[in-house]
Amino acid sequence: FFQTLLFKLIRKSSSPATLVDPLSSLIMTLVWELRLADSNAVLKRNALIPCTSTDHHNKMLIGMLDVLYKRYSMSGVGSRASPQMRRCIYTALVHLLQGSRMFYSRIMKLLNESNRSMIPDRLSEQAFLASTASASSSFGSGSGSNQSLLRSLTSYSDENSHHTSQLNDPVEAMHTLRNRAVQTLEAFESNDRGAVVWELAVGDAMDANDGPTRALALTVINTLFPCDRTGAWLQFFRSQGFLRHLVSVTVQRISFDVLHSPMAHYLSVVSVMLSVAQTRQGALDLV
Image: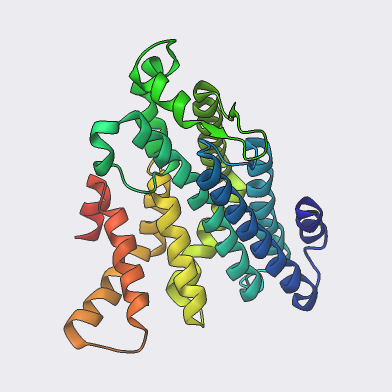
C-alpha cells in the first residue's frame, strides 16, 4: 500500500494539490505508524534492528525523495511543490531517519557499555559508520564480551511457549544497520534527488510563508547536515546565503527582541547553527 501511494504521487506529479495533498498526508501517517511498530517491537523483544527491512526502508526513502523531485520538476520555473505536500514529506523523512538513528545509537551503546552515557540517543548515519569501523572486528568475533552481551540481549521469552528464541544475530544486525546507513547517505548524495531536497528545504527555511513549513524545513536541514561527507552541502548553504540568513535572524532576536516568530523557530535556527559549527569550515563560515 505504501509503495502504491508513492507510485501514484510520482506518476501523477502534475496533479492538482487537492489530489496530491491527501495522499502525502497518508504517506506521513504510514511512516509514523511504521516507526511506532518498530519501537514497540524493540521495547517488547529487545531487538537490535527494527522490523522494517533495509530494502523496504530504502525504497520508502528513495520513493519520498522522488516524490519531491518529480513534483518540483513539474511545478514550473520559480514555483515549488504544494506547501502541504512538502510539509508532509519533510515530516515523513525526519521520522524515517530518526527511527534508524535510534537503532544506530542503541547498538553502539551496547558495544560501549562503559561509555554508554557519553553516546547520544541518536547517531547520524555518518557517525554510526565511523563508530562501527573500529568495533567491527571485535563485534564479529566468535568470542568476547561484546558478542556475549549482544547475543543475550537479542533473545526474548515467547509468552505462549515459555521458551527463549533468537531474534537477531548480532553480526547480522550490525551488517543490516550498516547497509541501511550507507544506502541512506547514497540516497541523499545522488545528484538530482539530493539537490532538490536541499533547494526546497533551504528555500523554505528562509522564506516560507508559514511558520510550520519554515520549522519543518529547518528540522530537515538539521537532520541531514551531519551526513555531509564531502562538504558540498555546506558550500550550497554558503552560495544560497543561508548561513548569513541564520546569523541575521539570531542577531535580530538577541539585539532587538523581535517577536515576529515563535521562540521555537529561533531555537530551530540555533540548533542548525550548532550543527554547522561542528566542522571547522562551518564554524568559520558562521563567524
